[in-house]
Image (cartoon, rainbow, N blue to C red; front, top):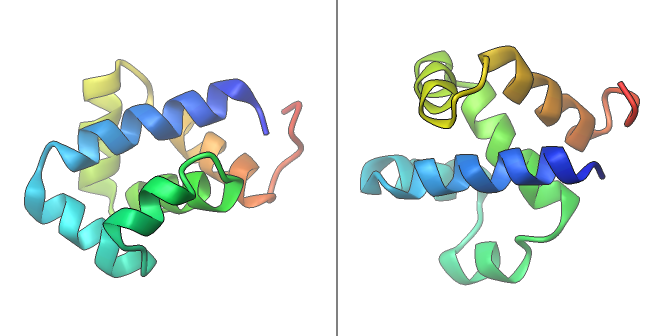
Length: 90
């Protein structure tokens, strides 16, 4: 796992959690509980789920990218790498 991808996922999580309905939607869509999220935050699958959540809903992807000062495709590429769908050095 690239440190940059993990950092993007953690930044995205902070953005997601700043909005309670969005945070609840993340938990509902991923099946994670707040305790489960905390316990697995360093795991690749959890980080992939966080970014996958954004990629699945373009308005959130674009808004999060804007808030983090990134292009949406940077987040999407990090999601693919974390999901194992792209080479780690790509």
